[in-house]
Image 1: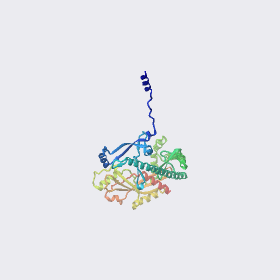
Image 2 (image 1 turned 180 degrees about the vertical axis):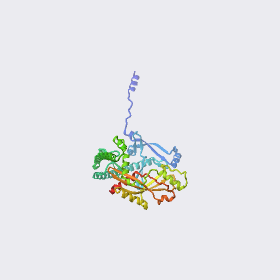
Image 3 (image 1 turned 120 degrees about the horizontal axis):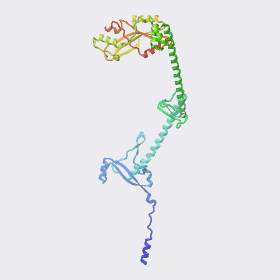
Image 4 (image 1 turned 30 degrees about the vertical axis):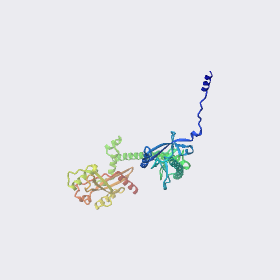
Length: 411
């Protein structure tokens, strides 16, 4: 019985519990990574290492050196060897993302010194970057304030229309390119830019719409005035057949304007009209000039340069003076048209002279161009004048518009 009692007492003995003391947490396992050069890899092999370029090891870092350790979001602790920081002359402290490079396997003290250097330079590097950002921010704010002040002071300036400005955001063009102004984030006068830019943008839209309505009304009024003048002219000078078509609304306005033009320029009826057969005339000219009767010039091959003539022969000037005396209220100018073929670069160009006559009569601007034949022109000196030269070149719309503008300015 006594023996059993002692055995039971031994079973009731509680095992001692291990307690965590500060001694067990005084070091943190940290991953150390560095790179060996070829000499370093040789030294590693001689020392019994693996000779790899990228070396990794785990180091127990004491708590008094935890400032040399970085821990990522996954909880991996690494010695501060990458990125590393170096002092580079005029550039100051620069950041290098590569791991440190060694010609021989470093000792633990060398790794600690490298980490300490990185830790110290990192603080200076970040402080310098923060100061530079602050300086840039101050400069940007000052520049934006200048741009905003100039915009608010000049009512003629406008924001960029694509994207269109809104009361909250807009873009202005500056010396530095596009600048975004946001009422929610800007300060000072820059905060007022979006609202003012939007107000000017909407005002411009309203003004443009109003101008378009006025122009449309003026065009409709001019059209109605032309219709009224045509009706009066047809009633007085039109044929019976034209009068019937006019009553039924079937008379083309262009036909009536041609009749009005014929009547206005009746004094020039003895002259040949400026026709649109430049390709045919240029082909005939080149065949005679080159002797190749199979030469072909298509309308798409013809290039025309038209301008006011700067010189005139006696016969040409006589025609101009005659028309000016017969139609005193018209604008009469001598025009020079140079025709050439894009397919025959070396061929002689054909020069044709015409007299352009424009006259404003009521709501119409009447226009006719007549050919001026002259045996002394340069184009005829190439033994290429045809027996009935009536070479015509179509004047460009821009030439016509410029001519009319000059004529109206002269009035």
